[in-house]
Length: 286
Ligand SMILES: [Zn+2]
Image 1 (cartoon, protein in one colour):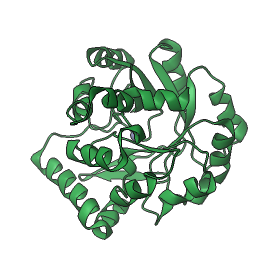
Image 2 (image 1 turned 30 degrees about the vertical axis):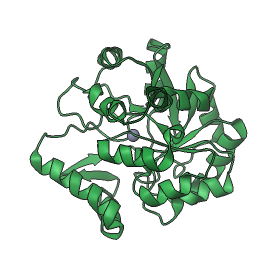
Image 3 (image 1 turned 90 degrees about the horizontal axis):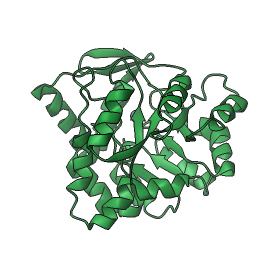
């Protein structure tokens, strides 16, 4: 069974029906949905943009100090700045959108509750979502919401005590990838986008942390980076995800096969790919 652990629902970019069609074509049984993080964000298909992405990856891997500076510059005053455009970041992502998608397709969608610890949000509200059907864990975004990893203490403690996972898109805060595993060793953690923006350093650390995983989602990565992550971490610590609809160029045209090819093309046995494509995640949320 193939399960995508990281996909946003934003029908201004991709309708639920179109998602299901794409999932069916690529044998994806279920997708774990996250509320939209920012306003509609179509991208242009340009050589310039691909070169920028390639340069960014290379800097993060080989000259992290410069790479991290560029990364930090992507978020400013509540806007995400990409390739000369600005997109408003949602301070309070709307989890009702995820709940509504699950209501419509309960056999196909799971849900993450997205929480921003910088705004007053009661644990009761988070728990309310966790009690709704198919919600499996908590999504947090210290990069876009701009806070220190320590702000996640109450949420991490809650997830750890409930035995539910937390998926996190890290900021560039120094050594922040060590904080939660050290303070909440039983917490099930997924570092999104293969642990962006730390990658190699993070893989080295995560390798020995029994409850910490990475996902393979987003255009921040490419197939060679996914390959490196799997080589460093092994197939039991890597989870397949897309991070769509981000990266789309045209309304309702999402190419599911692109991210899946990154896994399909790995030079590892099929049964190991099955763990990356779903078994690891199902075990985590089981
Ligand atoms: Zn995402």
